Length: 359
Image 1: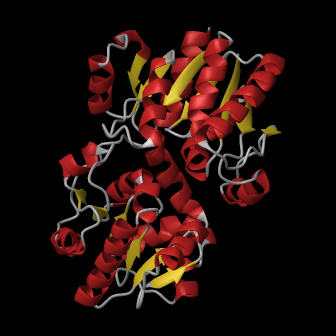
Image 2 (image 1 turned 90 degrees about the horizontal axis):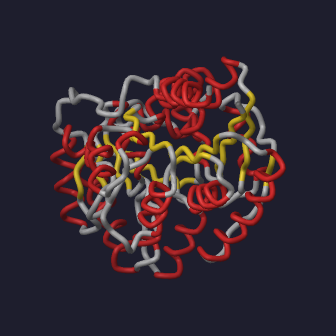
Image 3 (image 1 turned 135 degrees about the horizontal axis):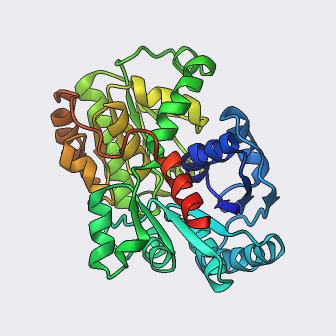
């Protein structure tokens, strides 16, 4: 049995960690195809090195472009590799254009598609990720749902229950496995002169926030209010594109600690040791839940409702006062919620199911 893992963004590398390691442990025949959706492979090489993962066998370096251009290019390039390699299973993870391209290319060739993190829905079709999730789910043969909630969503959409497997989320595996590496390798706290529990961590990167002047301005004002109220530094690792938008819109970020993007291990360590995290990232909502760190989501919706249900997360949008009030509410919480995303054995479960089906 041959397995192909298709990834193209840094969150996908992280969430594929445990599946790759399980393939290594069992000495399975597998290969990694990196599309280079957001970055060239050379920029992502440090992720593979830090996380002690094997290098991809194929690197497409597709780069940025319109959704149609990027996805179409990837479908063409992926198809050629799949025709040459002829894997039995193609694994994709999440909701990126890489996921959609991989699922379409494989399904058109009659290769079985396994979608890791299936069944997530924000019910906001203005988000390109929502379109990718739905189309990938409905073209997959194996849908690895992280929770019973996501399984129920898939069943409501008419997907055969025999295709759905609740396995938890591989982000739990990644957090547990990589936190040990981070503790031994990262000097993030020392380098940034931070003390555990004495800072707030923030991220904002989604187009609906950083490309909208009103929303981005409100978000930044909200972070400033949080910093003023708690008297603690707000650390915001900001992507160059988001930083550029601050200049384009003329938004002042006075007082906030805007720093360069961090490597994954450093960012993971900062999440674990922060007092509070404010974010518009889906993955960060999951990671903070697992790490028992309160989270404020800078959006009006989430495809991770489980974090809301267990009380680790709250929606605040981009209104400055709502952000402050949400931060105050979450900062006083007892960090005793239950992690809804599994025990950290999702990678093992996924490979076990594929091995059973492939025999």
